[in-house]
Length: 381
Image 1 (cartoon, rainbow, N blue to C red):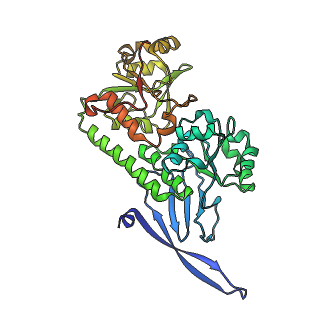
Image 2 (cartoon, one colour):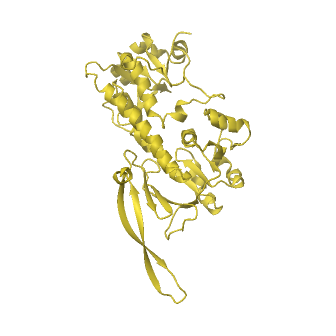
Image 3 (cartoon, one colour):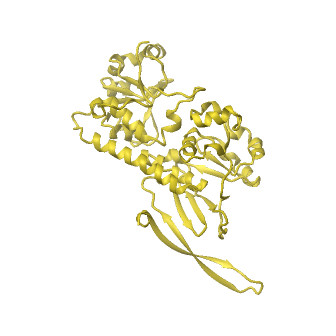
């Protein structure tokens, strides 16, 4: 019953030709389209012995759609044009973004990772053990820099983030017979939308039901925290500044972005809430000072280690009240053994932890027993 409520049934006919005498017949194949709750960038459909995935938003502004066929063990390959065909079960994969690493960990598939660009960026303890055991090949500065090594490793598939330059090698990898799967999770602007991409990975690994279970727990924890924060009145919401200055330009999340949405869900009043956009705003210092000089908190101030360092790098920061009062928080509390920040690895998959961190910072009494996971407060040391 639960599955019936989760899915939307779509029936389609796939024509299959048979016979030496050129007689044709049609075989009806049931295709079941899964209902995604938050993610907008991909769709999942299940057939008899196979799955179809369409990535409809591979990158911002893209009009191209990528179609992938995943064939279950002993399943038949249906007719159709696909950008890649993947045969289950999966034994070895290459990932190219740290945000993809938690998917393997949470689905119990960490040991199939065989390659990754700049493995020092990985924080996962499970993956680091595999790296230390030399079971994961370091691909260097990026897979685009070494496609020959990818081909030599011969993975069952490679997952590519469209934030990098890897798209240049899609045709080369396809010619080599290596399925290259586009992951556009960063385009999602709902925090749970990014987390829901674990279902995408789950299909590719033959772990769809496990992926649903993981996601539903994250969703439940996130929504429970949102419900708690909704008790806060508008008057009780502190003002929050985000972003930093780089070469006289202040970069901050647009008001429709993933980061701004979590701040609002946490009971904060974003100082740039009238600046529309899903990407990064580019503001001048005078505008920031006008809107944020009296901000109560400053969240996400890059990876500075102290207020002293911040003030030395950019003296103009010192004019902001949140800086003067020491209410400045960074996302650097947890680092991997080789320096990778866990925030940039686990954050997409665990927006519930980011949300609770922000609630603890902005409204400590709402979560009295909770301890910060990603964020820490800068001090004068």
